[in-house]
Image (cartoon, rainbow, N blue to C red; front, side, top):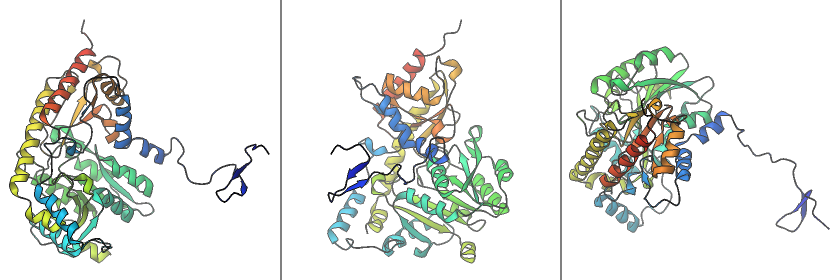
Length: 416
C-alpha cells in the first residue's frame, strides 16, 4: 500500500498518524528569542567564516574571537597542566562533587580573590560553575522576577542580553563613553533606574572595549548603585589582564558600600577557556544579601608570577601594535588605546568607504576578500563599530591588520 504522507512507521513496526504540526516550541522570526540567537557572537562569527573565499591561498586571520589558544604563544602554565594531570591520576575526583563545588577548590578561590580585597572571603561565599557562562545564566535566573529590570552596559557582552531574553527580564542600557576611556555614564544609570531595577552589570577589564576602570570610577559606580539600592554584578573574567597604567581593581573592594556579586573563571588569565571552570563570589561583608535571602588549589598555588608577567607582556605588545596599525587606516578610528582584556573597539567611518551598508556588510566583505575575521559591533550593541582581538601571535596580527588596511584603501572613496 502506498504511503500518501498521512501515516508513518514507528521504530516498533506499527504505523501511526503523522501529526499535522509539531507542538515543540520554536521561536518565530522577528521575536526577541529569535533575534537573540541570530546576533550571538558565535552565530555572527559563523556567518563571517562562511563568507571567506574557500579558494583563497592566504590563511584566515582570526581577529574576531575570544579564544587566544589558537596561537601557540598563548599557552597555559605548565603548573596548571600538571595540576590537572595529578588530579586525574589521583582518582579522587571521578565521582559526583557537591553542587556548589569541591570544598578545597572553593577555599582556594576564596583565598585567591581575598588577596585583592580589604576583607576575607570564606569558602561559603564561593559557588563553582561550568565556566563564566553558567555563572551568567545562574545570576540572570536568580534575578528574574515579574516586572524586574537589569541595567547592562552598551557596548557589552551579548550573552547577558540573550539570557535576559530567555528569562523575560527587562533590559535597560546605559552607555559607555569612548571619549572617557569607556567609563560608564552614571547620569544615564540614574535616569533609567527605577524601583524595579534589581542590578547593574560592570565588565572590568572590559570585553569588548579593552578598558580598565580606575579606583575613582569604580568608587563612583559603587556610590551610584548604593544610592539606587541595587546590587552590582561584576564580570571580572579578565581579572589582572591589565597592562596599561591603571592596575586591575576588583569591584569587591567596594563591598562595604554596595553588595557585589563577582563572576570569574580561570579561562582567561590561565588561558584555558576549554576547561570551563568558573565561579560566583558573594562580596558582601555587611551581609546585606543574607538579610534579604580538584585541581584548582594546585593551579592557583603553583603558577609562578613569571608566567602571568609573560602573558601581560605579550598582550601589551599586541595591543600597542594593534592600536598603532589602526591609526594608519583611513576609515577606522580607535578612540581609546586598550589597557586590558584582549580586545579593542574601533569605529568605522563608512562615509570614507564605498558601498558598505553597515558594519556587518563591512565584516562579511572583509572576510570574503581578505580572509580576515573581525566582529561587527552590531553583535555588541554598537552599530558601525568593530571589535578586534589582539590576543594572537604578532606576525598573524600584523598580517591581518595590513590586509585590513589594504581592504580599506581599495574601497576608499576618492576625493574629487
